Length: 437
Image 1 (tube, one colour):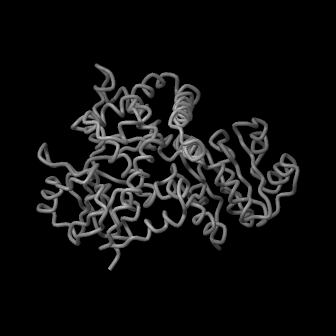
Image 2 (image 1 turned 60 degrees about the horizontal axis):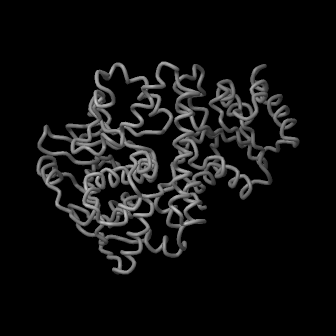
Image 3 (image 1 turned 90 degrees about the horizontal axis):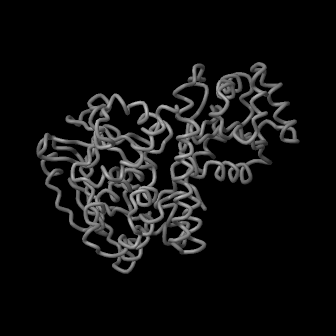
């Protein structure tokens, strides 16, 4: 399965300013597969080390930070010489060895000719705790679950996926193609972008098999709660995690701590929430009341929404039957909006790797997402089907007169100047549409 991040890895490999690379990403999003494939295709060979599977590897970093010694001992463990520039050195689950993270400073300074990639499913947690982090001595990339573009390439022809991805403003999909890609989008809502799930769907086209894999992933996440989180936070983690679908289903999707469990307050749950965010399992979208640059300066950290890192996991955890996504069941109407919002957020993060916010004006108007594109602040209204009426967006535009505003829905045309209409399945191309002449 093709992962678009391979292009960024190639740039890293050829960069004259290359540093050891840290690849972040939620568990089971495909980091190990991608790095091994990268090593096979673009290097003479690769050497793979997993700190979770091999506890003995930690002793290599216990003695000192002598890079020559570390490389020699890693080579002994791999059964081969690690060649500068020819061997990709992959240190997986590196969050299990804090000294290995610190050692990247010395590889950057003393052995820059070696190509080293560090990966880990809970790196966000480790980096929060790391006392001696190699600031300025490492490069960063983030791998997300498969985007809708990557999903399309996996389940249908590259030709059709590229045809869709190359649309420009003013283009309208022929109805036959629009129906086809809309169908793929609904499939993506059912499966999400976890590579093992997508692979299972491609091989079997059985949602029963897909849901077995999704449940196994959910189970592995919850095992992480028990294994890696502070014991006192375990029940809180589980409660927050399982409350997200319920809170997104409400008309007011702002996250309410007391809805997690009666009597619990924000101060009781904040540490557990930060753990989930650090693990990459949930995304926190804060409210802004003034859409000014930089957005982060106007964010209200106490008023926010929580979304999941994968729309398929959201569907499974919410116990939403996959069948209702394919039909017009009226009881699915309210949660349909939550699914579309979660989808859009994931696509925006994957394509921009930037932070999104939402805008609210008292109880009168709310715009789903606000992002910063260069010097422009762009409001985005999400519609789950073809209804594109957006009163909140109109109020926002009246108040702030943005250069660009976006409505995304199942409508198949890319149209509009002041308000750009973009099909949901093309939202990852947002930046290119905004800069298109």
